[in-house]
Image (cartoon, rainbow, N blue to C red; front, top):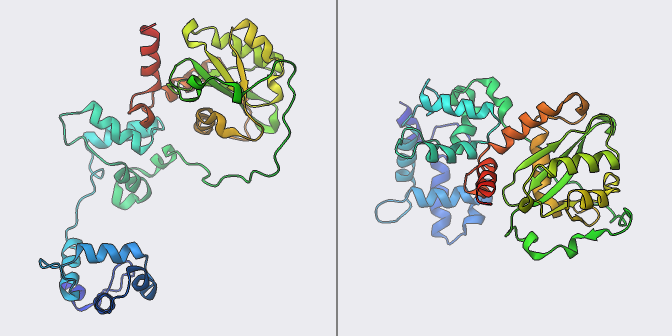
Length: 340
């Protein structure tokens, strides 16, 4: 009955093309109408029309509406069980990584690395998204949705360009930064910033290494004045071997008024971004977005102690990154330290 309904064009699901619409596609194509014009007349995206014609042509390469209707019906009549619906080893592994806030793309790529010979341990990132968003079809528990990383997609308007802030003497602008830092050819160069808590009364200093994306977090108990930030950043940077202390790039926030102390005490030159140009320290901006999973906006960041920051940094550094060919920042940093 179902196949008959599809063939005669009585299927009422608006997602699918009807037989009458397929006949109109055939007629318009014969009249030389373009794909976009056909799509406009049917009220469909032009990609739907081009895909319909490409997928449902007969063996002679002609588009015939009745044949196209049969081929589409046959494909839709093959219900497949969702890959993550069963209580399988694959589902368990995916669920564990989602709980660590790994993205579906990270999970899919790492499965290939972890189980190179096991084809059953494969799932594309889109299948994971489907499992998260369409519970009845996907099979993962609804509460796992909380592990999916989300954020605002729209950019804020730039507004009027602000004047550069004067942070004492010897400010070095990013335009004077060596080219080897810009192209990430040499490791040991860092980007930094503060993430702020409720009412800007608390903060955490964040440091990201440009080559490995390795993250370090600086505890700022009590306040985030220039002196406090300089002391915390210096202490954190000095835990690194000398060859990984190349430079630090920061924006022109007032917390960097004591940047000269970092340069002297940590032997680390500080470069300043242009006003209202967060993309000049893009790795740090991206990391700060990820950190908001653990330190939401509008909360008191002072409640998080040093151990809490170490734990969060460990989680971020353990996530595989596409830009690192699905290695983790921790693995890349370990290689740099061992090869020094």
